Figure 1 (cartoon, rainbow, N blue to C red):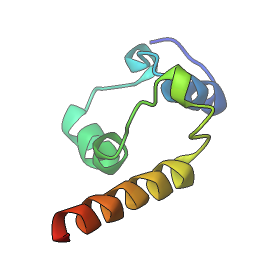
Figure 2 (spheres, rainbow, N blue to C red):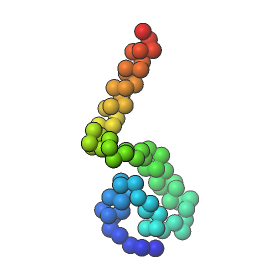
Figure 3 (spheres, one colour):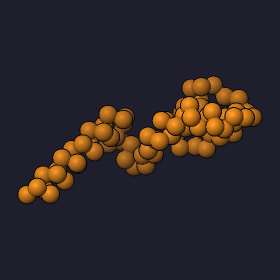
Length: 76
């Protein structure tokens, strides 16, 4: 297993790289349980969209706006 800093791990993970070589998966069930919420809510934003969605809040705001428009259209 290779070693990297937590910051480097986070950057590589955020960039969509396969970071499994840096994980100690001796106890896979424990890993899955402890990281389930992170992996469940992870969405990879394509590079061409990153300029429009620089962070989680921007993505959530855009999705809420879209959902409201869909609701309005459906009720009309």
